[in-house]
Image (cartoon, rainbow, N blue to C red; front, side):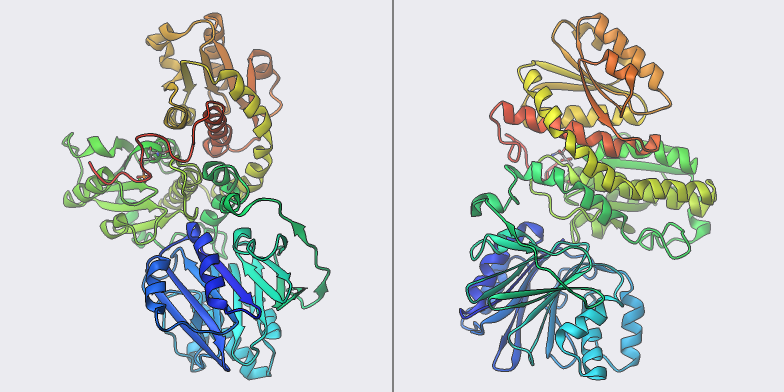
Length: 611
Ligand code: AGP
């Protein structure tokens, strides 16, 4: 997830671009770059690292043109180097583009363009778009708008593109297929951004592009087209946030913003996971079929929320692949003398890729001869160097300390890995795999729908915000969610919370129950539904309040619950991905009710780089 800005007007473009990029830096900070059109040329300056590095490179060398584009990068294809930093240009240097997303057919296009004589400078998927536009312009004498319109019909995948051309020094062309693009025009100014904050210094009347739309932005005007080239009516949206709130996209806190970004996080992590033959595609796992069949045991190592994702994944992996799975807290793993050899596969899960315990665990596993797959959200993070294969969750930068969208990204990535192993080892039928992938593809819109319950969750949070203890119970994957619900709550609300296997309640924790103690019961898993409701009866018999996360429309759960959060139906092993939403909102609204800042809980850091 990258940050994109564009400016055309009568002022120098550079300061406007840099301030817009600062506002979007939360979207990625692997590199930053600008392209400024000046005197019939395009001047590109780009640097790996944060915007400060770019500013240092620009010192004494500031282009003064009045049209330009800028980019802050969250690396996907190609490491976070100067050479892979955006903007990218064509062979002539007369077209420059910035991009957010993944161009899935970049390798095919690159080969075709190389055969036509194009030379590439970077390892990115993005650069093909610059050469493709150059090729169209040289073949047909097209304008930038015409060339971009043709190119977007050839590109596959997800892209927000912003393009400039030295020979058309008064226009920026931008196109959207999935990742967001907002454009705007004010007095003598034209603007582009991947989020509203980048435009707010100039206008509060913005035009968010819909999917498959192209905008031609000039100083003071915007024209809108579809991918077929038909002109569309421009519809403006008025924004009433102030600039400070805008960085959070109008949300009060990053955590709430990130909770709302989850449909997109899931969509991005799923992107490109089904190939043209309907098979699960996981190029990152480059082992042969025979090698995959050889795996006799999987060990998952992780901490905190990532561990909870691992617990849910253990159920899916064992059920779908029939490979035995051990789950370890990374901080415990290497001290327990584990049994592991070269037939073992270790999965290290860490959103930051920098958690010291997880890094130490995977290094130890490799020393023992095991293969290591890392699941992480951060390109270029340490774990990517310590693993044999890396699966990225494309959730975008997560700023709130409480993991939300990266947790969903992990669950999705781990399910894809499990289905891939099942496919390659032949432990699941092709139809079952397709059916499960289809259910996963439906999740983003189900999450969008589920987010509508936030007012109900907020009202319940108000009732329970004074509780001293809150107990979470679940069975199977529901137990992983009980742990996650309790972790989320305790880290941002400071209420004592515990997650238990529901069947364990009567072996001790039930002694904690009395009038007024809330118990959150995860009841969405079909297999153990009756047993979960029996546990809820036990809870109620002790005077505790039952907060039930239940399948939507379930009358039995409604009759038993003091509060109910209803969740749409999905496959039982996918329920954690939906159950997470009310649990995150519950923790968030309790923290807010208590006047706490969910983004910066006391004593915690976003990534824990000490053992
Ligand atoms: C999650 O809300 C926590 N802040 C914390 O438990 C976190 O999941 C843990 O520190 C592991 O981090 P990682 O995923 O970056 O390795």
